[in-house]
Length: 263
View 1 (tube, helix red, strand yellow):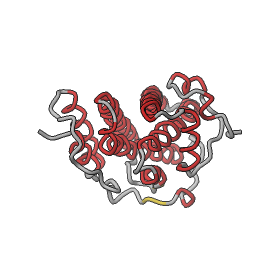
View 2: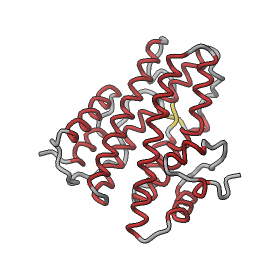
View 3: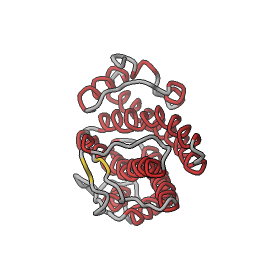
View 4: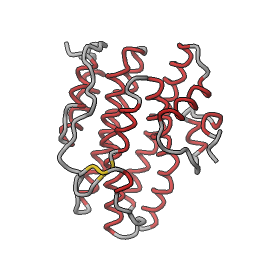
């Protein structure tokens, strides 16, 4: 029987967007139906497979996007969001395959679900791009998200601290304003997609916070100071407001984690 790590590695090794979506959904379904062993025999690749397009650029070389008013700027914004969700599929399955052996079985339950939901988010945004006359890969995208995976590949607590508790938590902060932007120009379809994504991402941050706290407790570490130390060491950006304090708190990411030195 295939084990969890082999299923996760298969997702990471799949480059074509729609094939990756299918692989992610299939892995989550097989796990839910009890057809995968809770085993970790396979090593995760240093870098996940990527399609030929989009062209990946350093964040500082990305073209500037306007606000959501014009059709071109709306497409650029949706494309950027689709890319985030595409990379998030791999981040979820790398989390599972790389670190799952260090945690109870429920860790696999959570990250299989996260990976399947990220795949669904990407599919919704890609379908929206096509409805607007574009597609994923039509524009360049930045490569900063996978850098966070590379930076934290050695340490499950560092990965949990940076990916769900910083990068995904940032989505909780900025997505409400993005939804309002699309609503303001009458794009209710995209606004509904982003509203769905926002609800799911809150649950993803909650999973990250839950397992970070579990890992700290298991190692006899104090969570808040440990998180702050790991973020200072491994996150290349700056934590800055505005913060969606209510959504973060519902996800277990309370203000004592992130308000120190963030003004």
